[in-house]
Image 1 (tube, rainbow, N blue to C red):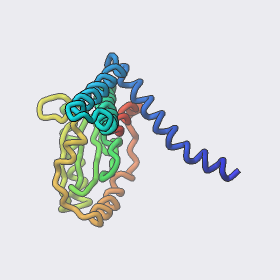
Image 2: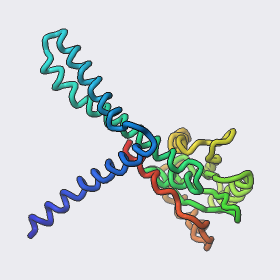
Image 3: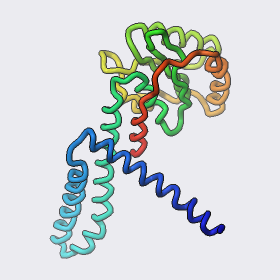
Length: 228
């Protein structure tokens, strides 16, 4: 009985990984044609190229042995790029897309969506990490007033903490949802881990205020970029 439980536990991560890849493939297939054929061509091109290079040294077998895992990794990397791009395309322009991208960040940041919004469902999301606090606006022109209001709240509850802000979108001066995670990495790390924990505790007093969440579910397909 114990052996069966152990086997079930060990098989669970594999099943979850397989389901993630299967879902990513289905998502990529909706946005791009011939996904499997594209990946297969990448695999074959690298493998054949390695074998041909090895043939010049009369080491075809060794070259195939070395090139095989490289060809697989290259094809899988290309697949993850397609899946990631398809995931962003599937939610781009939807309400809450920026929040979904932020919440898919694996580590280094604590994300609080919808910390401020108005009746038109313009909204501000908050990311807390070693650079300080990053406020991400999403919506129309009125979102700038929401960003300013949230910045003032943070300065009141956590004076001296660096606060950055930007608006997610496709307009001039805005950051595309495809570049949000990359953009966050550009901010300099100014706080220690201890200071970050203290900052999170202070900001709980803001996030714990009773605020009705905006209607409508967040887009769910953005989880696919985690394959990278």
